[in-house]
Amino acid sequence: MTTVSKPKTKRRKRRRPLSSPRSNDSLLCRIRSDKTAVGIKLLVSVAAAYSVFLVIGSASRDGLRRRLRSNASGGGPTSLRHEPFPQSPLSQEQEVIQHPLDAYKKHNSSIGGDTGEDADTKDGHLTMIEEEKVLLNVPKFWEPPVLAQYGGIRKYLGNYGSRLMTPQEAKSVGSVIIKDLVDGTQEELHTILVLFASFRDWMCPHSVERMFERAAHPERIRVAIIDQILDGDISCSAPIVPCEEDSNQALCKYSSQVEAMTLNANLSTGPIFARHLGYRMYRGEYFVVQSDAHVQFAAGWDVDVIDQWKSTGNEMAVLTSYVSRVQGNVDEETGERLSETRPLMCESNFSDEGLDRHLEHGEQPEYKPDIEGSPQLEPFWGAGFSFARGHFVVNIPYDLHIPLVFMGEEASIGIRGFTYGYDYYAPERNILYHYYERPENPNNKRVSDGKVPKYWDAPNYDDTVEMRAMVRLNDIIHMSPPRRHPIRDRYWSRVEELTYGLGKVRTPELFFDTFGIHRDSQVVEKNLCMFVASKSMHNFFVKRLREDGMGIDYEKLDGFQYKNKWPKNWWWWYHGDNPNEEDAYLEPMPDSGE
Image (cartoon, rainbow, N blue to C red):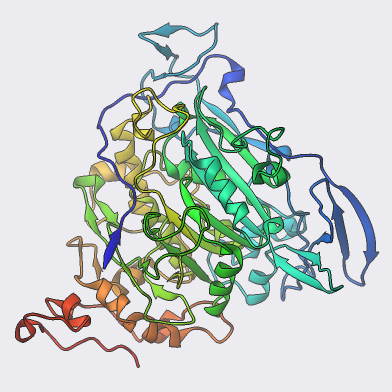
């Protein structure tokens, strides 16, 4: 067994708050679009209840026709027509938001980097008056106009989690394209949005390039990049070499399917804010992949991951894990898999102290799957790889109001998703691999000391803000101990709690009880990974999948609560190599549900 973990570096704790640029132009983050010309819309037919539009765009290629898929929704609109694929969220109407640190600022603050000729500087940093705010132009969350009469897509899809979506409502989300084949037949392809959040990462364009190259159907993919860079850094959306020198690069051939929102890296507040912006760039794709920006994709990954998702028979399935390392697991030249193991999301414990204490997923075990023909149920969600239907990112957007948090994002998304009715599965086969030890930048265009840049090295990092943001995160997901805490109560912010809060399909307390997480003592039952890896969880839970495929019905688990009943030396026992068999058992093995 090997282990993988969320990349983590010891952060230097310091208190250096953020300031705003003075000029109005610098108050708006730079937005860069790589979209080519918008396609010409042709109205080709009118059906009894709705119209179907074909979009013939500049990105169209031989034998490919793009169309929209409409689905009737019981109790909802007769059809939910999707916008053309691919779209350009950055060319659509934007909205202005305040930088997430504004709510936490109490004193004059500073930001490093280029400030412009008219800026007042002190000690190398821009000094601003307290009243000024950093404003950002960002895409609006996706809102199909046809759903305005229902109060918007979130109300249509279960009313912010107050009820489980119907199968018809869920299936109404997701565009497809129709590809004409050489034999005269047609193939329907589900569209995929791939999200990359990059922080000054020279490997990002290489990841995008490999993602397109190794897809069986690159024409169905749209890429949204949040590129947090400084002047002189490599842009994630720029081809590795100019297109004039090599027009066969994916970033040249599929440039109309790539869009990047560029943010000054000194405005970064960590992965949560970056991925929040990424979720805003969703525009009705059938599936969504979330990935880190320094990865290798497996050959044929798009067909494989969709097939794996379909094999669950669960519309609410989310395939997710920490990602296996590149070295020794995948051929970097071809994308061929070199190993059969993959991680499980099953190891977690409480971390830090005081108000910062939170549930943190540490190193995760990596096994060869024991279940064949299907992904395997697991309790936790991982940010490094997530593959789900488009309605997942619609229903569970990253919280805008928890800046600088790093290790808490997975508990936030995972528990909120659970309360909306989503279920988490480890993929049977990896579709991407992670560079945990990133190679040196061959162009030497990152930072002078050669270190991998981290957002907590930016001028705006403030550990007191992170603590206050963690209070909000913990209280929203009911992770704080039940006892009252006067300081915690003073810091607890309820802004936009409906948008970034819990659903009512399941309670967070059900999650804690089911998986042995004790909030009062802040202890997690031991050996949860054995319950997951041994197929006990999967075999027991999968039998409670609803007949309509809308998630596991936890009410049919009959109040199951995981308790540690595994052998002390369970790893050796499980693999038939226990050196102290007489000392192996504490209690009888838990019921596998078989």
